[in-house]
Image 1 (cartoon, rainbow, N blue to C red):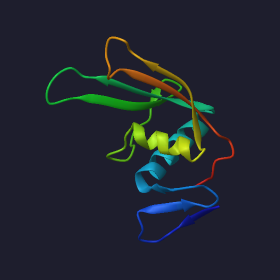
Image 2 (image 1 turned 90 degrees about the vertical axis):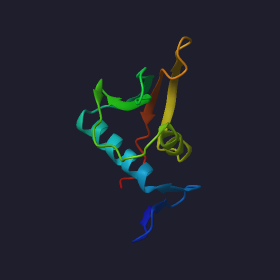
Image 3 (image 1 turned 180 degrees about the vertical axis):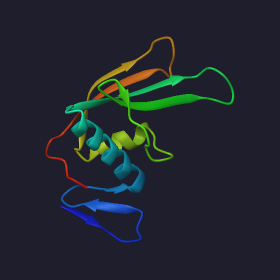
Length: 117
């Protein structure tokens, strides 16, 4: 069960240990919708260093090799880890470049029993 609190910046997923922020809920909603639209069971988080100023690390989420657009401003890899802590997703593989600390690829599966928001 999901409980919305009007005017609050968090939503409590009942029966779980912590509340998710608006950003985390927005990320979850976009991932869930993209996976549903493409009939995919998971997604990929990717990051890389763009290599020149003022641009730094670029991060994105892909479903079936298509980048998900319109993710909430300010989202980060940590938001995906919060979704994992809540049991909504599970990291099934983590790849880190040995040549570039900013280049990473995380493969996640979605838990079918996750809440609809």
